[in-house]
Structures are given as structure tokens and as C-alpha cells.
Image (tube, rainbow, N blue to C red; front, top):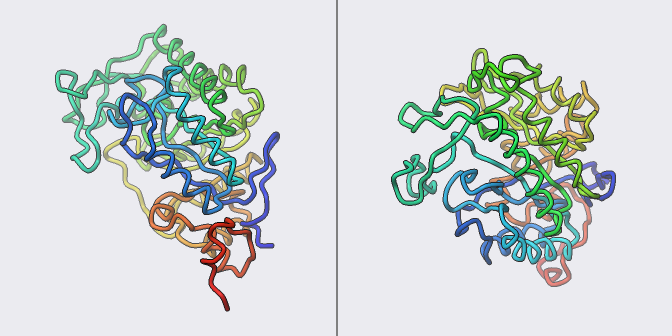
Length: 356
């Protein structure tokens, strides 16, 4: 069997294959509540036999949403619909995951199809953003409020509370979003974090916020698998880099983080991303080889052959696919056909299999 279709053994769970649906924001919630769009959107990937389905960035506080249309998990009332979503995903043999997030200075934006601009606190659907420092993402943005020590400590507790709700809702993978220029990444990057206290300056201080979140989440994790998504590099001079990422992942592994979801960029507006075929794979490969932690890679993965080669070359342990799942929710079934592997189809879809 091709490696892409071999199970991935976690400590307490088995992912039936190594193709994972990457978190993709839908901007379709009201007050953080999931609805039938999210049920059908996420459920279709489980029907299509994705090994795991990671729910979009789900905010741990109202102000942590990227937009007013983002999902949230800051109150108990959010749990009910999530239980329906996770129940369905599990019923199809996939593992449900959730990405816990706070957008920090990149919050309070309009929906992408309405322009994505930042909405000011004085406007409808807008609020004051926060961050480690008063540096805005774009020059036209309102500067974020610089978090106090007590606010940082309270935010760490919000991640823990969100984890408790997520586990009650049935999620078996808890992923902390530490990438793409959102709050955790903002603390990591010296281009964004210019604090002079214990949460800024040195590498040890800049990673403190994430490590304290991990410590608090671990206390309530139960049997869920803890993952962290990182941006391996800022793609900008003097920014967060792959060497720091490797050192961070060594520490995260020691703290019981089970997998690293390796992406890159998103931190600063002047980033210079050099994209192309498998352009982020070398970051995952370096982290995997130098730390030994389970490692996933993302970015422009569009077919089964490409994904399987990454795994066969030992550059990652699993792949996360985003946009290609939007184009083709049955990506896994098509990948099996492409690689001439026989995998089980949903019984209801059997008559749709091509006959040779």
C-alpha cells in the first residue's frame, strides 16, 4: 500500500490515511455559531474519506475572530452544533479536529468577498484589535492595543477553556494556531513583537506565550491529540526563521505536542514569499529530520502522486490539503484511483465508481 494510504498512529487515535483537510475559514458564522453550512462543508470531506478533518480557525474570544463571520468557541452555547459536526465526521471514519485561534492585530476585518479591509472599532462589526505590541499589520490599520501581562495570562486561560469546550464537543485533534501572523505568531516574530518584558526580546521570551498556552491546554487535554500550526519563516529579513522553528519544535515535542503542522508566512505585509511546487515542503522536512516530531506539510498540494511522493521521500508524515478539497471534495478517492489503490468508498456512492 502506498504510504499516503497507510494509517497514522497517534497516541490515542488512528488516522486511517495521511491526507488531512487543512483548516479553511468560511466566514459564514453569526456570533461564532456554526450552522448547516459548516456541517455540510466539513461533512463532505469525511464522506470523501479524508483521514482527518480540521475545522477552520475557531476563535477563543469574540475579538479573536479574523472577521465577524468566523466560528467561535468562547461560550458553552457554541458546543451543541459542534457535537453534530464531530458526530457526523466520526460516523464516516474520519478524525475530527479543531484549530483554536486568536487573530490578534489581524482581526476585525471584512469578509474576503466584501474586500477584507480592517473594520474600525467605530463601525458596525468592528472592534479594537490586540497584540503583543502596538505595531499594525498594514499602515492603514488601527494600531492594536498592546496586551498587558494580566491580559496575556487571561488569554492563556481562554485557550484552556476553549479546549475544554472542544473536547466536550467531540474533537479528537486540538490544533493551536501559531501561524500566518495571528496572535501566537505575533509573539514569536521579532518583526511584530518589540516588548521588553518576559514576553519579548529573546527567543526564550518570544516563545513563552505559546509554551504557556501548551502547558495549560495539556492540563485538560484528556485523550485528544495536541497539534501546533506554525509559520516556519516570516519570509522577511530579521524575522522568525526556520532555525528558530526547529528549536521551538524540539521544545514543543518535549512538552507533549504530538504533531507540527508546518506552513509559512503571513506575519508581515512586506514578506517576500517564493512560492511554487512543494515550496513549503523543505521546512517540514527540516523540522521532521531534526526533531523527530510528527510533521505535516501544506501548500499547493494538488494531486495524489505529489502528496505520496512527499511521504515516500520521508519529507513529512502527513499532508494537509486545502484549496484542492474545495475544488474536489473527493480528493482522497481520486488520489486512490490515480495511484491505483483500492480503498473503501461510502456504500451510498459505490455505484459512482468507475468501471474498467
